[in-house]
Amino acid sequence: MSDRQTETDVILIGAGIMSATLGTLLKELVPDWKITVFEKLASAGEESSNEWNNAGTGHAALCELNYSDEKPDGSIDISKAINVNEQFQVSMQFWSYLVNSNLIRNPQDFIMPLPHMSMVQGEQNVTFLKKRFEAMSGNPLFQGMEFSDDPKKLMEWIPLIMKDRTSNDPIAATKIDSGTDVNFGALTRMLFDHLKNKNVDIHYKYSVDDIKRTSDGSWELKVWNDSGEVERHTAKFVFIGGGGGSLPLLQKSGIPEGKHIGGFPISGLFMVCNNPEVVAQHHAKVYGKAKVGAPPMSVPHLDTRFIDNKKSLLFGPFAGFSPKFLKTGSMFDLLGSVKPNNVTTMLAAGAKNLSLTKYLIQQVMLSKEKRMEELREFIPSAKSEDWGLMVAGQRVQIIKDTAAGKGTLQFGTEVISAEDGSIAALLGASPGASTAVPVMLEVIKKCFPQHIQAWEPKIKEMIPTYGVSLLKNPERIRDIHASTAQTLGLTNELQPIM
Image 1 (cartoon, rainbow, N blue to C red):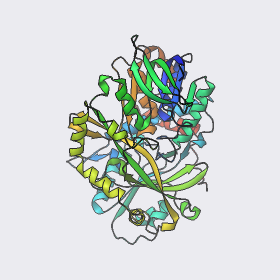
Image 2 (cartoon, one colour; image 1 turned 180 degrees about the vertical axis):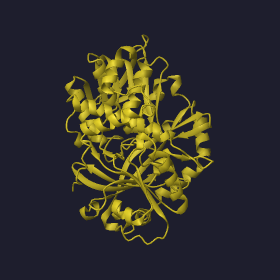
Image 3 (cartoon, helix red, strand yellow; image 1 turned 90 degrees about the vertical axis):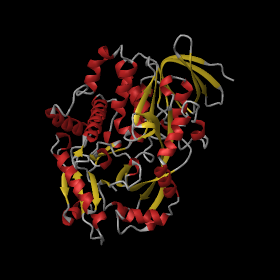
Image 4 (cartoon, rainbow, N blue to C red; image 1 turned 135 degrees about the horizontal axis):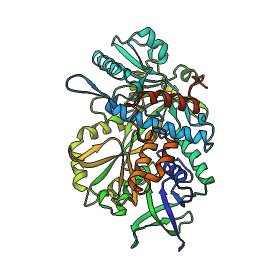
């Protein structure tokens, strides 16, 4: 058994996009702080951030219908869409800063321009989409959005979806060309390469087993190293960014803020097409409307993806269920997360979400042919032999007691931190990676309030609109859109690559 002990300023648990972003921000703000990273897998960005485990939509609320709700009076509430879009603009500014500072190179290796579209069928849905378009297109954040219910125009936009369509149901779509496809796995690896050059200690195949408070207020981690020996590492600040694996470690920390919180794992399956003839006919991310009873993260979408300089199509997600909190997790993860302080919360969630449980069971039981039937609602001519099935990442939705009642299932990303800011954990799922920068800035603000004033000039250098509402300053929106598009190489519509 190793008796190695080290002391460091900051420990980051998990080598995904969140730790990569927080580590990079802190290295810019305080270059002399010592940062250590522990990742249980063999390399960075292999779990929730991996490009095959992540939809890569660059969630900017341009096409995701679940970010805009129809109110009882029939008007459309786009406040959630505005919030998500403003957060994505923050991420884009930070990535631009990294490229302009030569801290990362070749942005096309992780971000590509791609139209974002919403598509609906049926009279009621077409009416909803038109109202949503009217609410959004007048907003400077969503400038350039187009709407059409003309089959000829839709044939130009989405030929693969419109070809061989026999249904007489009305169909409509919105399209905005400023969308992106983001490879968060590639971005995570680039950021960790940069951190390694900045003397950050990154340990792969190191598994954090326990976290406890020491008498001087620091945190001591019990870590299994790559030789199967135990090491102890202490830090003044710990960030738990282990995707679905964050909840058990948060519980072990014993902080009161981590009590009465549970997690519900949902896995995703995608259909993948690599037939070049089919792939060449589609160039967009097209989001539909979730089926009644389906959770928001099960909105069907047909995505063009750029991975390893190759274009492919993904359709899904089909929900699945596994008690694991990570793809590489244990079958006992869900059971092990039930504690005396959250058991009533978890039971309340179970009783409240019977329709979700039923939906998941139905999804798990789907045959390939049944999945093909759902795909054919998007691509009527889809052939079974062109499409294979792929298991995407595990997502752990947060269950907590809220104003809406005990055991409320949350769909979103949330930071839980100790009152004194010495430890923080990231929980939840979508929009996740797309909002990594604003979420990590929130961690910095919550956990280092004593430094914020001194750090603000540097934060504003990295994110020019930090602390500014873009909506209240529409002239800034045009500048930010133009400068980030220029830096990240999103200005010229690149020819689809095969």
